[in-house]
Image (cartoon, rainbow, N blue to C red):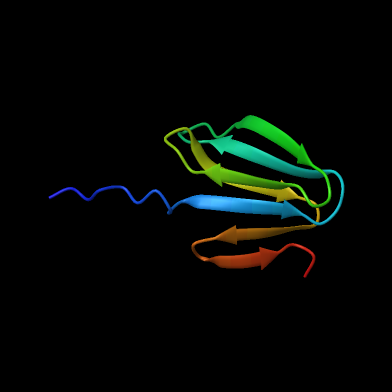
Length: 76
């Protein structure tokens, strides 16, 4: 029996605490590569979702990251 996908899972929210926070999406597969980069300024929020193409997200800079697993503050 297959489960119906939950539209509220596998989302990650990044809120920049300073100008110039970089958020980088990494590809899935045997050869991990950068496939998307965003630059956020203080107070900007971006919502990401893991997909068949995105296996990881890298955050560089001071930000708060929210996910179903909890909250992470990169400044700590």
